Length: 168
Image 1: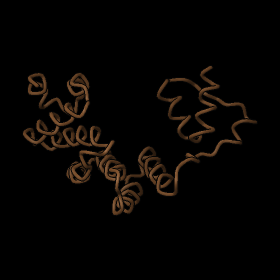
Image 2: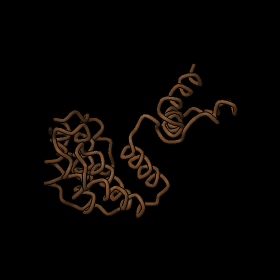
Image 3: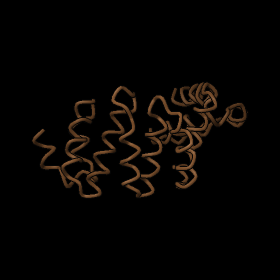
């Protein structure tokens, strides 16, 4: 059943998404070779912009942060849904450019589907640069947006404001 579900995911969303899903599930997925040749790597249902976002995300996974940042910066110029700004923030965050990450996360609008993740990551970035007051404001917004308080309490990036999070 799991192999069949991953096969379907690969057919609909590309091999990369199926592989990510299997890794998340901690499941060793090895599709039959005759099936694997029929999978596209990138999600075939996405437009060119969506594939570019996937490519930038893959660069982050490969720790090619400079490549990812350059591509996300290009995409952010015309970003309307917050996904490129979130991706840029993540790339800068993983590159340990927390100030750059803060600037990118702050550009994700509150109406965006990316907002809860962006404001949570914004709180983490503020905490890591030692700005506890702004980290606390951001984590309150993240919790209101649907991020669980338990997740925030368990995150080592937020350890400097853990006592304040417990009071929320």
